[in-house]
Length: 198
Image (cartoon, rainbow, N blue to C red; front, side, top):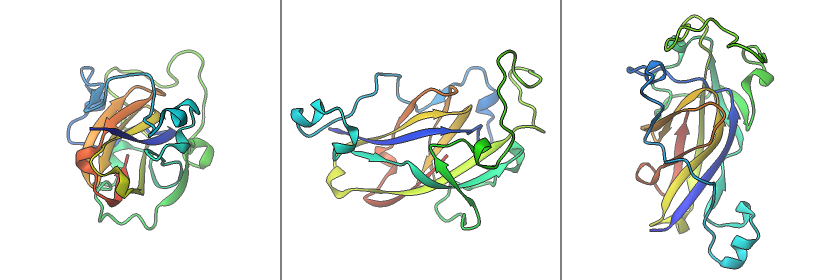
């Protein structure tokens, strides 16, 4: 089976999503259903096209850059439950550019710390009174010519951790700040419109 990649250049301030199990406070959990780290590559229909090394020319590539719907929660306890479900109403959510950083788009406080953490560290626990979370949603379309192909979604970066849902189904989790993460989403997608939530 051949591969297709949805590329998401995601350099956003994602911290996490509320879940029943606090994966983000479990030192034994760094990823769920995430593909093994590898050199980033993409399939092309011809050798000549592959030599151009321009992903945008491949019919098996789709960028998810652009405007996403966004909801900011200052505390992890305030993340809207079920926002990843397709029928969840996000019409009053803000628009957020992706790639982007929510602190530079009016949410939270930007800071840079060259030593230490910038917060009181109590590993593996977070400060639940200061635990900003960004919920992101957008729709995307699977082209008909991808039928029968394996489809992967590639995130260039996220801070500090994130869950991924496609069409309301939990795909996986990644916890590795500012590092790429890839997930196979073949079994979660359908031809036509799909909903992605992070």
